[in-house]
Length: 445
Ligand SMILES: Cc1cc2nc3c(=O)[nH]c(=O)nc-3n(C[C@H](O)[C@H](O)[C@H](O)COP(=O)(O)OP(=O)(O)OC[C@H]3O[C@@H](n4cnc5c(N)ncnc54)[C@H](O)[C@@H]3O)c2cc1C
Image 1 (cartoon, rainbow, N blue to C red):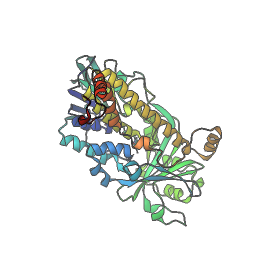
Image 2 (cartoon, protein in one colour):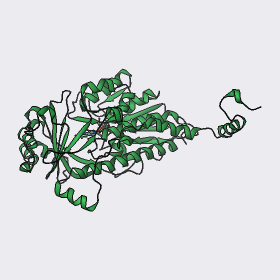
Image 3 (cartoon, helix red, strand yellow):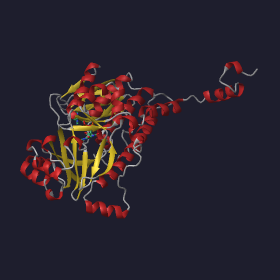
Image 4 (cartoon, helix red, strand yellow):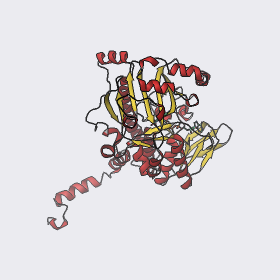
């Protein structure tokens, strides 16, 4: 039974979850060291959408104030039909309801701010090393190896090494990411190249927007500070490829553009104008892979843990992939310094994983409802007839469970409940009998 907090944590992966874990552990007074495969000089492309639950974590860690001026701040995405009528508004953030607007920010900006903070806090990061396998794990700690033959040790090793996690092999051998059958095709274009419906002037056209038509949904989302650059994309059913196959699909720019433009005549004017103005060099693909639900997120000896995409890569529609990784990291960091004989590591981790999995399950359910709303018209009609869940907004407070959750508070409440001394109960009970009021003046003789 492990009944003392770890002193040294090793984190595999300096991605979004790994860096957030390091900063959160530092806040809790636990030392850590990060090991990352890629050199920091390697640039990352694309932007991410962050909702209030992610922004609350980043705010607590002192990063939100630096981040929000560097991205596009907004509240809703409009769902429109082919006739350009807004059929629903989905809240991705809301200052009044959920504390924060949503933020769309380049991944590189987010990584840079997280790395800067890690540097400020003097947390060591070893770049250019690839974790290979666990050598041994027992009551005293964990020893592990890198592919270059070097070795290291720690009290606990956390795998934040992404969807194709190597650390996961020690916890769930044989589990591999599953392809969902869908690939997103996207490009980044200038907003002023779009042709708007004749009755709406460009500045009044809502962005982000998801236009639902015969072909499914076409999404456009601004991604730089002034909103002049827009990510435009749609998804297609496509057979699974190996790595070389996906690379070949991406490399064949003209072929990919043709696939992107399939069903061109069935889209409204604004989508057609996007498809007419695709900058070929910005074309990208994103095959949707998910990690099947895992029995455990840690080894039987509890010295090796996974989180973020390594534990639960989820479909993208609710924009919660990174956000859930932030929450994992933040809550694990809150739990680890509070390990005691009353709350040993195995019990604490089991509860943590259950709390996290319940939230992930709810996000997956929400994602399914949103996915169903994005299907091609004929499939949507079939689904509606079968009673399958399709997202429809209610009073706009219905996402409070997701955006307003204080996940750290929930962990601390659990710790408090578990570590309450059994002896304090009878004493409290006795005191309440002697003194019916908290006011000492009123203590009965
Ligand atoms: C195109 C795209 C758009 C997305 N948009 C959104 C969005 O809008 N909102 C959102 O919330 N989510 C979004 N996501 C999902 C989000 O990016 C992921 O959920 C998130 O990055 C997961 O973070 P992570 O730290 O768990 O993994 P990663 O970010 O993948 O980081 C893993 C890190 O581990 C390192 N690593 C891997 N193997 C090893 C090894 N053996 N040794 C050492 N280091 C290793 C990697 O180099 C990497 O730095 C998007 C994803 C994609 C692909």
